[in-house]
Length: 112
Image (tube, rainbow, N blue to C red):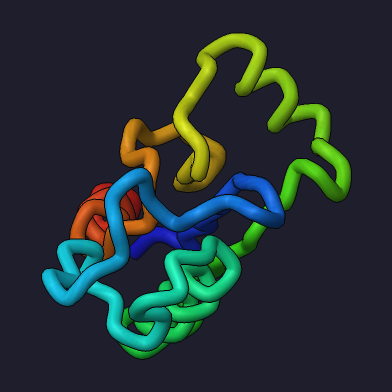
């Protein structure tokens, strides 16, 4: 079994969790942040749900680039121009571009 899977969500303080509206369809798979549409709230809910599912095998970190951009994040942005919010799994850029539980879980499963 692999060690801890590190999920990093990169965005701005004012970022929304998705380019799609936060509505009753709940296509993102998260419930606790419903209607806020805010990245901070979605990451907190994602952390809660992933902890319930994976325990300490998954670590979720929010990086707000308007509070300072780590050099490795800056290098990724300059090279790949990923969508915001950017989702990294064990340092690997995914093409998810939003907070969505099923797609993030699929990326975690690849690592476990």
